[in-house]
Image (tube, rainbow, N blue to C red; front, side, top):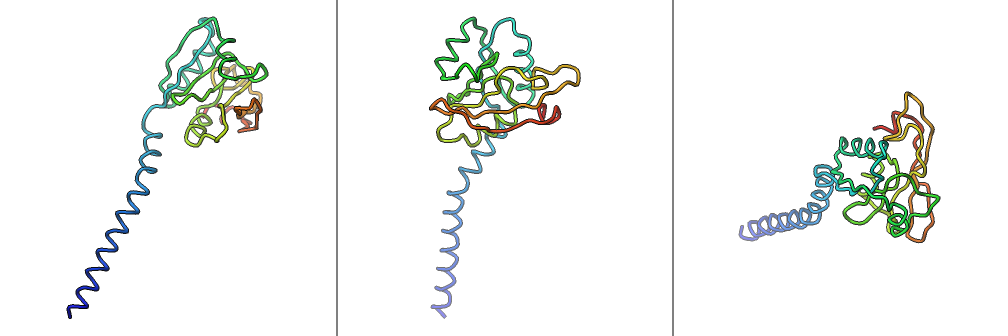
Length: 172
């Protein structure tokens, strides 16, 4: 009889230990993912004081859960150069996340969120070069031109990160 009770005691104890180990391993990841969805994502956006499309992109990002701090400057070229954003990948404003990633131009919020949730190891950030019609902040009537989101790498190269093919997908 004692052996049977001892067997069930050890079995319950082992199951309890397993639950504690699994919980400790899974909870931090689940907590981090939930925090990324709940808490506003911080961006510092550097732009020209007179740029209205930049103001519209900032409003768009704020509406989608970001907390954007705007910095008006006349020295955007120097900032972009210091952050490693090549001339071919530049746009009218530069966003910088709390952990130092750059977001150049009119990037849709869902791409910024996806990037921040799982940044590639050698990434500098994302870019939508130039100012494509129909991108967030660049809306004009119902006009739209498909555009690419580029992954900027620390070595100066780029890789296609995403493509936006419709006005609806651009403004999600």
